[in-house]
Image 1: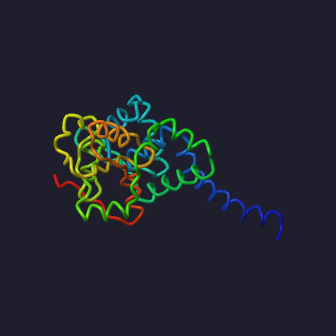
Image 2 (image 1 turned 120 degrees about the vertical axis):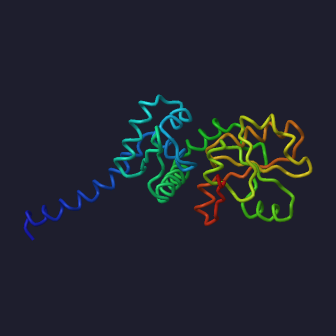
Image 3 (image 1 turned 30 degrees about the horizontal axis):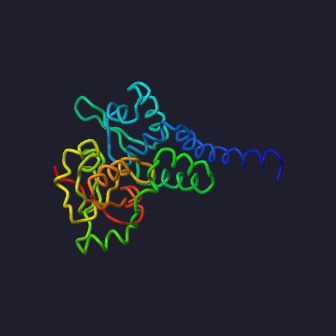
Length: 228
């Protein structure tokens, strides 16, 4: 095989790997990763994403366009607004696996997580199989403390929705004779920790489910959706 033949075969291979790199480049930004994380919870408008991610609408829009160019998100006009969503469930899996690799390979991830969730070792963490058993036995109540729109888009079966910002005003809705198991957006979300702090201060028995809807689905479990 001549050098020209090798070059001709090499070019398609480089183009192929260039397409893989296009996905990596689109994700290689902390703000865009946060947007993917939010969209894994529920479809959102640019304005809603900007508010959750504490960015300007213009900056959020630019990041979304990069994700859209890489076919990681899609958009659809709904009246005056454009709503974004993940283009495929595999995008959520890719984000999940990226986090897993980072956690295994970078010790700094645990250090950063401890700094962000500084109470994460304070409360019992309940595994999924134990949660399901104790729910069947009527021993626990599962509390979803994410924003209402995320709960409506998909939540763990039989979960009760009380967003973290409203929890203090609705404590009387939780049975005092059951353990309250709180969950939020998964292991990199602090809402459930904040809920447990508040509930423990009111003498509730509490535990945390580390998994969120993404982890739940990837483990093969079904979600429930609120019918509007």
